[in-house]
Length: 163
Image (cartoon, rainbow, N blue to C red; front, side, top):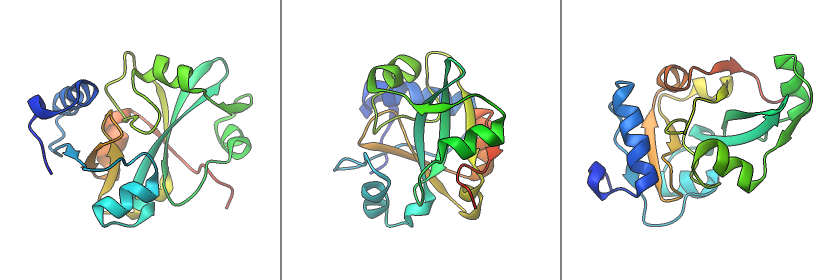
């Protein structure tokens, strides 16, 4: 179900505002069930799991790093660190995720955070006409193109798994 901004959870309203400010026209959809995992989101949307843009927060060189990755695979932190030329990359804890994004794990959007985050975007998402990202709450998602995701996040296209 597509919702008007006033019907959205508070965190999703902030995402809707950020999407509008970026000129994106995809409307946030509220799902009846949780879409905390890529598999849950894909099942609810009737799309391939690879079209789900998971928002994962890591710690990298003392700062949060947002990784927008395809739901079809797992991020390889050692490979990613090599791609970025950084120190070790480790998964952020739930408190670190909320502090960096203002959102809870399972609903982290690519935008609507208290401050911009360094972001990388999995090149595997480019193979999908439409990708679906969380929209600030575990029951909300938003469609966009890969190019829109790059523009929205200012992200760097990167391979996040060893090939």
